[in-house]
Amino acid sequence: MRSRTGVDHRAGWRGATLGGAFVVLSVLLFGCGGTSTGTSPTDTSPTDTSPTVTSPTGLVLEPCTADGVPARCGTLQVLEDRRNSAGRRIPIRVVVIPSTDSHRQPDPIVWFAGGPGDSAVDTIGRVRPLLAANTDRDLVFIEQRGTGASNVTCPTFPDLPDTAALQSAIESCLASLQADLRFYTTPRFADDVDEVLSALHYDKANLVGISYGTTAEQVFLTKHPDRVRTMTLLSGTLLDVPVFERFPENGQRALDLVFAECERVATCRAAFPALRDDWGALWSSVSASPWVIPADRSPSGTEVSLDSSWVASKLHDLLFVETTQTSIPLVVHTLGATDDRVGALLALTQAYPQSADAGSAEQQMLPSAIRCNEAWARDDPSKLVGTDSFEYARDKSGAEWWQAVCTLIPKASDADAVVEPTKSDVPVLAFNGEEDPQDPPSNMAGAREIWPNSLALTVPGQGHDIDPASAACEIPLITSFIERGDASGLDTTCLSQLPPPSFDLALPGS
Image (cartoon, rainbow, N blue to C red; front, side, top):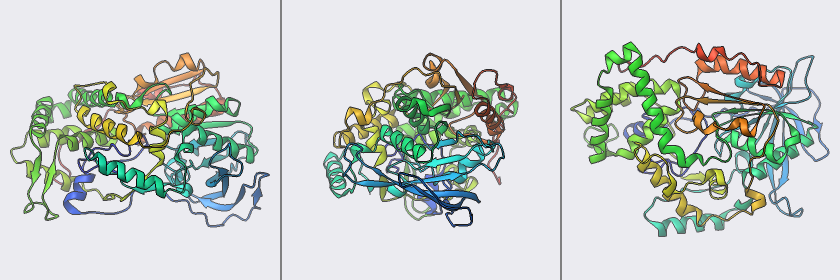
């Protein structure tokens, strides 16, 4: 759901995805397609011969496999509007990977996917390695309403400034929906999770989530505090912090940290001694006028125009992941120091080939329901922090688009949308990447005031996603935290021993 200018205002994801610098450019130039690597489908073939499990609420779990291991799969029909017992029901897919340990513990680990818009079930293959070290606990994946089996979509909405077209598209969308968006909010998802846990006879659970999933965890803790044994937050933000309004400031901070890291690493400093000047030249040039790849030099045979919003979006994508952050100095130098703009762009797309989804004519409506109703997701263009940020104009455009959209999205009641953070003694472990452009450590400041038994950790050099190097440290810490049920006394020395980044110093294949 990317706009024609490259601004990611339609989705506004906080989910964890592995992106590359030139995915969109590759699509524009080469028309490359392919499948997304973001999710792994669940194979629900009945290979396990254990008996079917049926709960009193009608949730039937049958043998299946998930990510190649024996599991139980089923679907619970929940009320769309919980106040109307005769109303419409929607399907919520559930997958349980049972513990095979002889000392199985009664409290499972429940995964909260990112987004909003990711299906916990569809992401099992990607996240199970993060959780599987806890062999003595069941792993539970509960699909959020509005994703997966209950996915609610509409044709993609147009950009501003054509407000008439935008209004017409939204009104047409709402008229065609077999869903009431007022009930597709995080608090209603929290109630679905509670219903599933009751159906499966779990008294307490250990919550683990990433990005938006950490928001859903906090909402669940507030609404169903007696259900939670521990809570692990990966790349999250406190519930009362308006995360989107901080995007410009946090994006610029992350970019400055990458530049500073390059200056500290001798090989990077030697390869790019004028990196900040390269950046200044690139940003001044693309801000003055778009870079144009003429049709006769474009592999797609069509003219491609790239403006400052495109550059800002690509930098934000690169900052997302530690393994792509390491290409930023090379990318900035290649574009900032060049006399041949077209040649530099083509060299980058050839050096970093990506297979990408060229875009969809459909968009999920779950983000609209959440972003237009929940306080943490407010995005007032007049309250954006960081006016001097490279992505301020991009984020302001996105905030204005959402402001226009939200005037037409049905409003949820306070009971369906409003949750205030409350103090809890539940043990909490939080990880935030030092160079995260969306959910940096500052967004978790004050956690101890809300959760006295909490530990907030900063992962050096990490962006929004968990990269392989830091995962080798974070997974044992998460495992130990859940086993102990206590954040105090964890040995976190592995964080200080993470290797420094290995920056790309030359274009691959050059």
